[in-house]
Picture 1 (cartoon, one colour):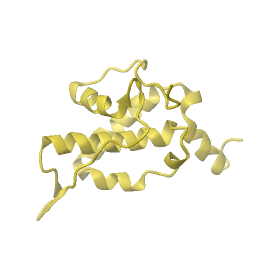
Picture 2 (tube, one colour; picture 1 turned 90 degrees about the horizontal axis):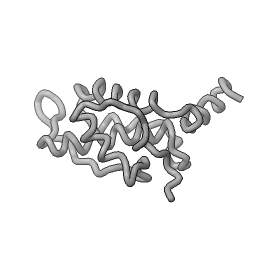
Picture 3 (cartoon, helix red, strand yellow; picture 1 turned 30 degrees about the vertical axis):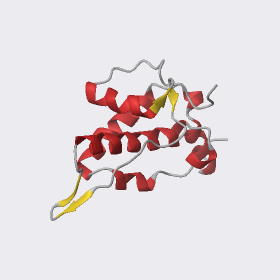
Picture 4 (cartoon, helix red, strand yellow; picture 1 turned 45 degrees about the horizontal axis):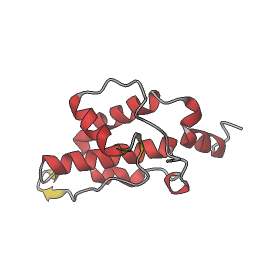
Length: 127
C-alpha cells in the first residue's frame, strides 16, 4: 500500500485538460512517488516553447506533480521548495498550472498537507 496521499477520492471538478494532467500525477489513486517524465523546451528568438502538445502535457504534469508533492508528500526528498520546476514549463503556463495545484491542494484534508506543516514549523508559524 502506498504511503503517498490518496487523490482519487477528492471532490474536484476538472476541465478535460486538467484531468489529463491529473491522470499523469497519480498512480493507483495515490500521488505518484516520483516525478513524471519531462521533455526539453526548445529555445527560440522569442523565448522557450514546447516541441509539441505531448511535451506540453508532460511538462505541465511534472510541474503540477512537483508542487503538489511539496505540499503533501511524506517523502523527505520532496520537502525542498520546488524552485526549479519553473524551468519545465513556459511562462504562459504558470497561471494555469498554479491554479490546478491550488485546486488539488484546497480539496485535500488539512492533516495531509505535510509540507505546509513542515514549513510552518520551520518558519515558526506553527508549533
